[in-house]
Image (cartoon, rainbow, N blue to C red; front, side, top):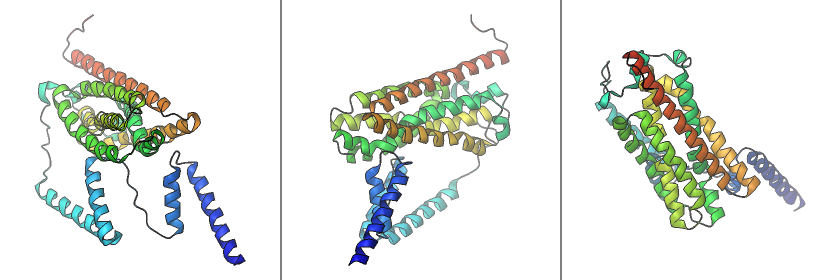
Length: 320
């Protein structure tokens, strides 16, 4: 009996040591860490699901239902086969775009300001426009990732259920990419960025001020945050293609996309750390709102530089 007690005590000490180490990196998620740790020591299986776009939400729901009914092996097999079939079908109708892309409506093609040159990634890294986009991406992604990483603990601390918000928010995230991408084709990339970045700042403030009042306000403000945040994943790729050309668009955007990783540290880690130190989520939301407004100013700067370059190219005198 003493040997069993000793082994249990050693296992408990090891589990607590692991939790302590993980908690130094994953801030504000003690319940998740405890559940994952329990599953590891019980030699069980863990399904981790975060708030992303509407596509992953649907797939995760389907996988969960299959897992409940037939086990996790069937869930992996079913979803894998389903995704493979969809990819194979879509591949039959995909075609390479024409070598010369069609001009954007209204003549708002930003690539014109860079002489329609097809920039390689190394050339992109030598342009000031890239760094303006990169910083704006980091600043804008921070608020949404703060909400994504901490929505569960936030709802718990305010005494609300996360279920409805977790269901609707990914749908708003996915819809934002489609709607604002469509809008940018008509309004211009930079104009759409300015509008949505300002709206994002207002929505983040709304979560901090109105989201605590009731479950309805919590859900509404979170959905609004996602609907004014998800568009960055359609605006920044298209803006990068507009400025630097389509020939190396994949590698160029791959470098630009690393901004999301930087933002995840600021939004997910720093946001939870601020909460642990202050006991309030408000500071993180207000700070993220300020970052979104700075991103809007940077987007406006891109718009202004575009207009200046076009005027110089056309030899049109700028207004005083």
